[in-house]
Image 1 (cartoon, chains in turn green, cyan):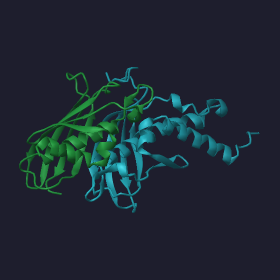
Image 2 (image 1 turned 180 degrees about the vertical axis):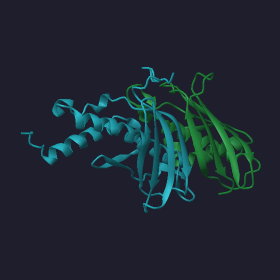
Image 3 (image 1 turned 180 degrees about the horizontal axis):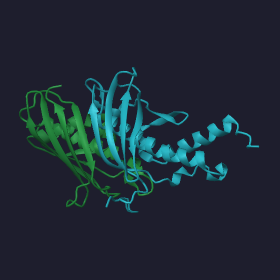
Image 4 (image 1 turned 30 degrees about the horizontal axis):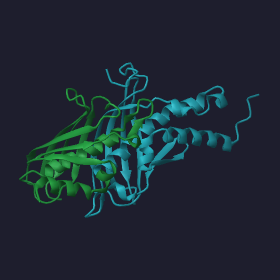
Length: 137
Length: 176
C-alpha cells in the first residue's frame, strides 16, 4: 500500500476528523495537506455564516499532527503539546478550506510545526498555526 | 416607594432564556453538543462525550481540535454573555428589552493558544472562562477545562477577541 492510501486509511480511523469531513490531499516527508469542505453545521457566526474558529483549529491540528508523523525522524505516535492559531481573516462561506503543514524541526522529544489555512484566495491566508508536538507519545 | 422586586422565577426565566437563545444561535455549538450551566452570572460550559470527538482511537483520547473548539466556544460565550447580562439587567423596560440575543454580534477570534496538559478522556468535559481584559477594541480571555476532577485541568487556553462594536471591525466582519 502506498503512503497516501495509508494516510487516508489512518485518517478515516479518526472519528473527529471524519465528523468534520477532513480528507488528506497529500503527504510528504514532514509535510501534509488536508482539505475540509464548508458545512452549515460548522457556522460560528450566524450573521455572516462564517465557520467557527474551532473547526479551523481542528483542521490545522490534524494537519500538523500528520506532518509530524510523516517526518523521517519521528518515532511512534504523537500528541499536541501546544498549538496557537492566528485568525487573520474570516474564511469565505461555501469555500473549501485547505491546510498545509510543515514539520520543520524534530528533536529527540519534540517536533515543531507550522501551518497555514487557505480558502480559494490563496494570496491571503485565513489562519496560521504554530505549535509543538510530542515525538513518540 | 420603590417598586416591588420581581419574583425570582421571572428573573431566572429571563436569564435562562437569554442564555439559551445566545447558545442556540450558533450551529457549531449545537454540532459539538455544548451547553452551559448558569449560577447567577457564572457560566460553566459542558461538553458531553460523543464518539465523534475521539482523535486517538488507540488510547482512546479526545481530538485536540475538539478540545480547542470547546475552549473557544466557552471563551466566546463568556464574552458575549457579559454583554447580554448587561443588557437584560440594566434595561429600563425589561420585558421590552427581553432576550433578542439572536441579533447579537459575536466577538471575532484574533488568536487562540491552547496548552494540552494531559490527554482528554472519553468522558464529559467542563470549562470556565475568565475575561482578563475587556477593552473597547479587544478582549483577552483565559479558559480552563477539566473532566472528573476540578483540580486536574486537562487543557487551558488564552485567546484575544475583537469586540463587536470595535472601531477595528468593519461590518463585513473582516478585521481592518
